[in-house]
Length: 569
Image 1 (cartoon, rainbow, N blue to C red):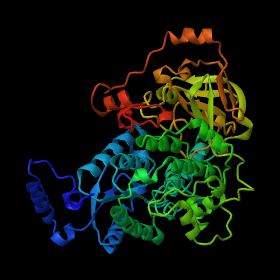
Image 2 (image 1 turned 90 degrees about the vertical axis):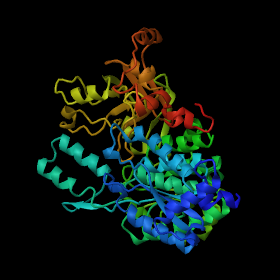
Image 3 (image 1 turned 30 degrees about the vertical axis):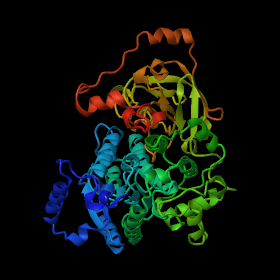
Image 4 (image 1 turned 135 degrees about the horizontal axis):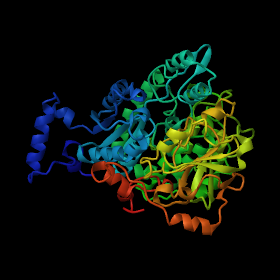
């Protein structure tokens, strides 16, 4: 890169006179008190995703100051700038609906503004994948910093944390096991402070796989949001960004096919969120790298779950941090990994492992010889119900339901489910299979985390804790149960899931990786004749129109077709 393409001279606004463009740019930024000396230094953009709606990002202002300190210690000029910020509980209709929009915002602001490298500060579930997608497309040197997990709270002497315990206590409340007073009490303790969910949900999963990808500093995934360790990582990230700018080390040099394979291995070994396979597919797609679900499933047969964190285990992210973080996991996975992959530090994954602190005794990460679960956390299912594939988090399912045949109880939409699920007259038994249709990328729209279908109230009150549940929706990484997700093609575009009717028999066989609708083809062909796609209010204009016309299916990462490296699905 020439000097004309660096710093303040990079990406000048087009006035037809580049000299005037630079003159005008400097005049305005000097209005904020910058000197010519400052403006001649490498410029490091810092993505500011602080928001009054986003508790996961409550510490972003502190992290920005720490990053700025690191940048200035290394001779750079830090310039924070805002982008979209997405929180799971404050995104209508869903956070996935907005992920691609945030990725576009991130990409275009990195392109539009002068910066030699960028620090991406994210945390809540969709923010990190959106930032990695945007950075991959922008092609500017980038390093990821996450806000970090929240600490745990305490409820009546019991350690609790978002959001596995959120679902557990709500399930108990629905089953009338706890009363209004207790559910209100625990509501005050589940999120005791800022930071992302403290279990192996999507935020924690994406932090760990991003570190495994090489896009984050070693040790950056696990320090709690409120800790001094988190701020020290932020300072070091600022220093790393200046070095990245000097070396012109871009995301495509780090996020290679081999690096994505490492990330998928880590995803399986940590019992990570099912959302992460969609997100990694989307990030890889921005670089023209395919993620093969068959290969992912082959890896799942070779790699075991090693991390004892909820929902697959019993502990929390602060415990994993105390156990050594990702480094402890990578040491157990070493035979499976490509250690020659480059990281943001300029060193390889293997070199970083060699340089890490010695291991110590801990009981959070199991030995590969004595795993928590004998296979990877997820399995890929196929069959006449899911020709494009489906996902089950087998490590968080009930073992006795992994091979199951049951009668379908069908809900045609989220609204239908909300209306009828708790009806005492609903014809449903514990060995049935609950089916939710039209909850996929286009059907809902936005592929909500509705796959964690509640147990019908009348069954919950009888003590039923789990059932086979299937849908084209997603599920929170903090949830557990025998739940088949991401069924593709989705019902809303004519997928077989939309052809299921009450009383049909469905067979789930995880050991054989099958999900089958036991209905003859002639009957299915007759049902196809009556298919009509759902119609969404507001679909003719704006972002909703763009989303519905270009969003891809789950196995393609739910990205927009025109955003992929090849510009098509």
